Image (cartoon, rainbow, N blue to C red; front, side):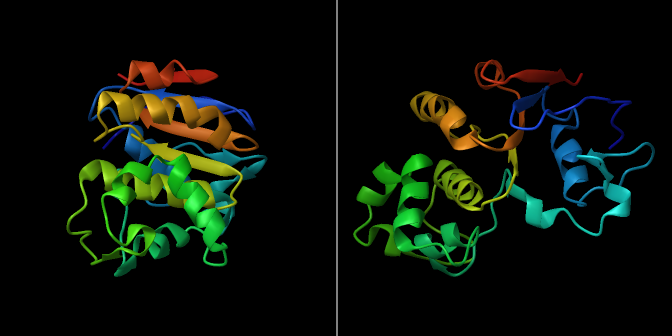
Amino acid sequence: PLIGPVSFTAPAGAVTAILGPSGSGKTSLLSLLVGAAPLADGEVFVGEHPISKVRSVARSVAWAGQTPALAPGSIAYNIGLGRTDAPPGEVAQAARLAGLEPALRQRTDGLATELDERGSGLSGGERRRIGLARAWLKPAPILLLDEPTADLDEAAEHEVIARLRDLAKGRTVLLATHSERLAAQADHVVRLA
């Protein structure tokens, strides 16, 4: 899809919301940053480095997409894909921060609950929270959140919004959303039509 022209700066250490209706290009814009979408014209910079000249920014980016990839293994294993050397306590803390505790209490094995590659038995909101926990666990200076409160009920959305500042500390955050409530928490808002 064609986006733009778009020009904005996402200041280091701040939360920038990309706000717009479905189909406006929010996800495509975030995808440019991880090399998953082509740039037809212009340039994207990370700091002073143009992405076109950098091999990969993947190590600098933690990504929580709309449909988190799941691998066969436990919920803890899937969260730990964000940082494979993370101690179990930090994985559990990431699960708490992402609001997974109620879902884990409903499962006999909690974080040890085994998943298949489709995440059978998980709701869309639970998948979303696993993706959020994985992104928050990865020690990357840039955090990209694609519709982080989609598939969540109003109470769960409120929890994510309330935790956003704490979870974003020390990171540059770009979040794509159609939620005015979530965008209101950002330091900067970029509106797409």
